Every structure is written in structure tokens, then in C-alpha cells.
Length: 189
Image (cartoon, rainbow, N blue to C red):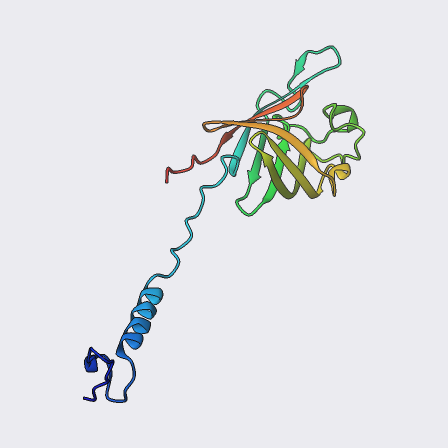
């Protein structure tokens, strides 16, 4: 081994056979090992918003012009609201007695749908699909791209909502509300 004279201290053990400074090389190797072994942790997936999921329609009520609550889609309406984790939405609602109804006309539509470019569908069916955006803990905006309510297509349809356990209360206005229950409760993380 070669010796390097520093004046008062000989540190030949710091030099390799080629005369390179081993301290610098060792430091470089140590930092490289440290950095390569400390990759960023896998991102922790945030739990989905409580609104995300499939909801079965249990009740649809609307106040009439006299302020009396009506069950516009019958006492046991059928339908699902699906809020997908990727932001897609599907709303499907049918009159409770749909199986016996051969069709309905514009006079049979709930007040909030009449005169809005509604396509009259057999069996008193309402549906639309598109995407949604959660504005805050109490407002979701539906962004329909298609469906039976033509006036909704391409518009923003804000809805107030509240999730209580596995129940979802959702309103378009103070005079119309829907109650839904989660189809499959989410498993705890």
C-alpha cells in the first residue's frame, strides 16, 4: 500500500491500490444503498366516500301543490342509484306497480319531471346515466349524459344528500326526497 503524507498523520488505509480516496468511495456506496433501499412507500388508498356504492330505492316522496306528501312512484318504488368509485353514475327508478302498468303518459308523471322533455316510457320508468361530482359532505352534482329526462342531459343536477349508516337521504329540493338503503354494506377496512 502506498502511503500519503499529510504532514502529521499517515492515512494509507484510506487509499485503495489506485490511490483513490476510500472515504469518498465508501460514503458514495453507503448513500447509494440507503437511497435505493428507501423507495417511496406504496400509496395508501383512501377509503371511498360514504356515498360511493349501490343504493336500492325504498321511498320517493314529493309534496304536491297543497303541501301534502305523495308517493309518486307508489308505496314500494323500485330502483337503484349507483355511484361508482370512478365517478360514474346510474339512476334507475320504476313505479311500484310497474309490472301491472302497461304504460303511462305525461299526466302520470311526478311534478318535478312533467314538462321537462321527459320521454314517456312503458311501465313508468325513469332513468339516466353519466358521471357525478361530490361538492362537499352534503352536495353531489349529477352530470347526466343520457336517459329518459332529456332536459337533464348535458346539465348539472345538484342534490343534497346525507348518509346515515347504510341509509342515503337525497333531495332535489325541499319538496322532493328519496330514501335509499345500501345494497351491500361496505366491509370495514
